[in-house]
Each structure stands twice: as C-alpha cells, then as structure tokens.
Image 1 (spheres, rainbow, N blue to C red):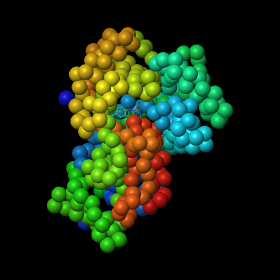
Image 2: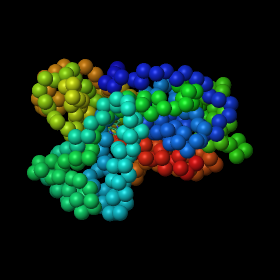
Image 3: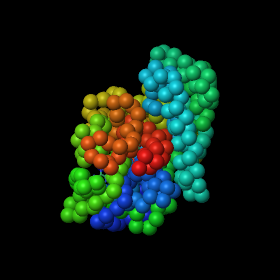
Image 4: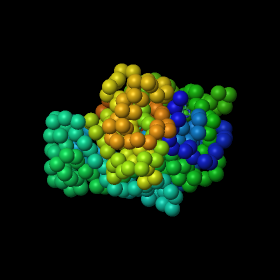
Length: 355
Ligand SMILES: Cc1cc2nc3c(=O)[nH]c(=O)nc-3n(C[C@H](O)[C@H](O)[C@H](O)COP(=O)(O)OP(=O)(O)OC[C@H]3O[C@@H](n4cnc5c(N)ncnc54)[C@H](O)[C@@H]3O)c2cc1C
C-alpha cells in the first residue's frame, strides 16, 4: 500500500462544481493552488476542483527538493535547449524557489536552504557536472565542484504537502472544492462546459492542472504518466547527509530531515518500462533497491513509509503552459517531468497572466 511520509493538509474543503464560474482550475496539487494564488492576486475569480483532496497527487508524495533547472545537468540542458534558453530555465526556477517560499511566508513549510549536491554515477556524468560548474559560473549562477560532487548552494527543500496547504489556506472561502471528479470537457458557445458526474458548469476559462492525469481528460495531450517510488525511515541517530543529494542523472535521490528521518527515492532506471503507469502502488523490486540504498548510506533506522506517486513527463522535458489548441479558453499548466516543486509556482504565474 502507498503510505506517503508527508501528512496531508489538515483542512478539508468539501464542495460541488458551481453552475457558472469565470475560471475553473482542475487539480489540487502545487500547480493548482499556485494558479489560484496568482489568479487571486490578479483579482480573477476562480474555483479549484480536486477529485480527492488537495496534495493527493505527486505534490503530496514527492521528495520536496527545490532544485534549480530541469532533471538533466546544466551542461546537458545547454546542449538540448541552447545556452540562452537554459539560462532562462535556471533563472525561472531560482525565482520559483524565492517566490513560492515568499508566498507561504509566516507558515511552516519545512523550508531549508542548505543547497543540494549532485553526485556523478560514472565518468560521463562527472564530466557533465564539471562542465556544468564552468557554464553555470560563466552564466552568473552559484555552483561549486568540490572534487566529488556539484554543490548548488541556492537549492533547498520543503515539506511539499505543507507547501500546498500553505497556499490553499490563502484562498477565499469556497474557492477550493474537494471530491469533484471532472469527467468531461466540451465547448459551450464561448465558454467551456465542465462536467463532473451529474453536475455541469459553464466556465469562462478552464485550466488543466492535472499533470500526469491530463490525457485522461484530453487524450491528445502528450504527457506520459511515470511512477516514482520512495521510502522513509524512523529518525536515524547519525547524520547521513547535510543536504539533499541527487545522483545517477536524477534517477536516485535522498535527504535527511533535521529530526533525523531519511527519505530515499528513485531507482526507476532499473525498471523503466514498468514505471510508465498510472498505478501508484510501490513495487517489491524497486523497494528492495531503496532498502539496499538506505543501508548502503549507513541508515540503521527502520523503514516506516513506502509509497509511490505519478509524475507527468513531457517529450521536451519542460512544462506545458498556456492555451491548449482544440478548444477555446482551455489552458494547461502541467507536465512538470519530475520537477514540479521547482517549476509550478512560476509556470502558474505565466498561465494566470495569459488568461
Ligand atoms: C516520488 C516522487 C518524488 C518527486 N520528487 C520531486 C522533488 O524532489 N522535487 C520536485 O520538484 N518534484 C518532485 N517530484 C515531482 C512533483 O511531485 C510533481 O512535478 C508535482 O507535484 C506536480 O504537481 P501538479 O500539481 O502538477 O500535479 P499533482 O500533484 O499530481 O496534482 C494533480 C491533481 O489533479 C487531480 N486530478 C486529476 N484529474 C482530475 C479530474 N479529472 N478531476 C479533478 N481532479 C483531478 C489529482 O487528483 C491530483 O491531486 C516527485 C514526484 C514523485 C512522485
């Protein structure tokens, strides 16, 4: 059974689909609550609907790393997207970190900014990380190759479910409605008709913040559901790592909370095909890798939580944002390719500004 480590948001937001709305946001993860936050600062009336509860999806099940950039190293990003686009992506994710934490000001979201370390798995990754340090420094970013790993001092970590809860708490009463499963979307004059079972709503605009689940509503959207698995242990008396660690081209990662618990995730690279799924149950095979990894790190404490979540991968590795072709007034803010905590707040800002 999937038992995420992070406590779900304590507040409950039961509700139904309204009959009319200026904007309907579908999905109550970090993207959805960020959209609501930006729309309300622009005085746009919006309703967010979520079929389970907020932070039920990947946003309540992730590792909580706040990393600059995409899954690949800066050097690879420069090769893939070009130098100026890579620089823009790193800039926007650094800004995402600052602004998202600022938006949660005064609330405990478990934020720490001790940096992250990227450990190379082999010589080719080592060469890419050394090249990344040069390129990042030349482009004005802080980065340090210390002989064994690339340290990004501006990176950080949060409790992701607490982050979602902190943004949701700022929404006007009645604007978040849990337990609303949107089953269909269609054009209705200049509006979008949103259907949830027996209920329907005429919305001036609809934003899909449904990440991995987007193709279930709009099959033409190319987002690949991709499972990621984790474990967490009881508090470990020894210090395993002082900062979150990311390794093997992002396929493996671990961190330790100030209270001692160790979280280990990834190892999807050992079974890539089985992990292309909506099934969010942990598997014996990958869980064994995670157990071994924890032991290899020197963790003696027992495993207390095992879980999986569903990420949404795009072909480009970058989020999809803005109007979605095929239906007027339908927008998307999804496809975070395993990095939604690092991107979604700013992606949501862009989408809110385009409405
Ligand atoms: C194990 C794991 C570790 C990760 N580690 C990190 C990390 O360290 N750092 C990082 O930046 N990212 C990480 N990620 C990725 C990150 O969690 C996601 O990119 C991010 O949470 C996506 O947020 P979202 O709001 O777009 O989607 P989600 O959080 O998945 O939210 C989508 C919501 O939409 C709702 N929904 C879907 N369809 C409907 C419908 N028809 N009607 C109503 N509601 C609907 C779902 O119930 C869900 O709650 C990790 C992911 C996993 C699974």
